[in-house]
Length: 404
Ligand SMILES: Cc1ncc(COP(=O)(O)O)c(C=O)c1O
Figure 1: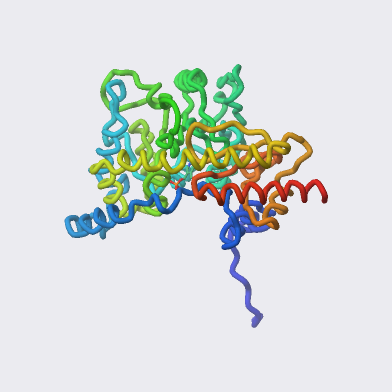
Figure 2: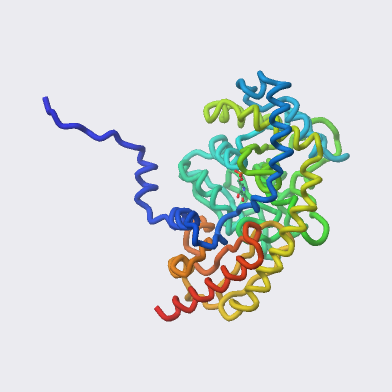
């Protein structure tokens, strides 16, 4: 007998992940350094978390509903929360019932579940590009192929993207990473093509409530409403979360879709976490029932709009020779594209970290990892003076990159 010991092994997927030179890990580790100005994350300002109110709701929920808050709940979520979500997003033309709603353990789980339900290895997904890096991460184990959709192109035709794809993925409001809105006519084209091609159309909407200027555009689900009554039965799957307006620590999100899709997602969720925490579901329910989200929105706008303006002013002051950008009308991000196509923002990240500022390089938002000319800058986490200092540090990093 061989007396030596053998090491237990991880899966091929984990071995592959840990062998990659992952820029995400670099910036996540760096953004935790106390001296670092973090412009990289998609984080709300912690002072906006309504701690007192959530604590009150949580305490009352545990006392009033000990079995639901402390025991297992139905896989689909608390019926009362499903009803409240259905009511929140129903309109005179869009009829939603609890059969249209699955409560998820945050938006990230929704992304994971849609991958599990729709994607077999080698299947194709049509994605708005650049796209949310969490979505790329969630689907990576399923080894999909991608078709990049450039939704900002006026002549964009969804048909070639949808044909042959299992689903199409978009973040129509203040997209992560670009902060842009998908224009109304393109939204309409997406919905019409989804209907005709029989392709699921995923509308991921964590940022829709963070509108600073102007009026909101109708969502894809709203555009697909047929006014016929009865539970919605179309191809749009909307994902939402309490993370950006209430608190990401609750880890409560939802999916709204045709009942047939909700049933499939529920099967997948069973093998994922059995159920979302009943306690945080009750907290989310309380937040909906007491109008907390509506009450907090003006506070968020009053804090975030000046922060956006401060970031834009700082960029104009220090980074205009290097980058161009658009001013977002909501959300959390400014997407800055280098004027010089030779700039590599993966390399810039290392100079930025040396200068004490962390930014998200564009390669992490590209399904091919090839687009290296832009950075995503967050304006919600830091106060205006920190934003200004962060941009100054980034300008120093640009100078160091040129000198290198
Ligand atoms: C586009 C998008 N979808 C989903 C999420 C996931 O949010 P959470 O898991 O906190 O609900 C995020 C978070 O940044 C996001 O930007």
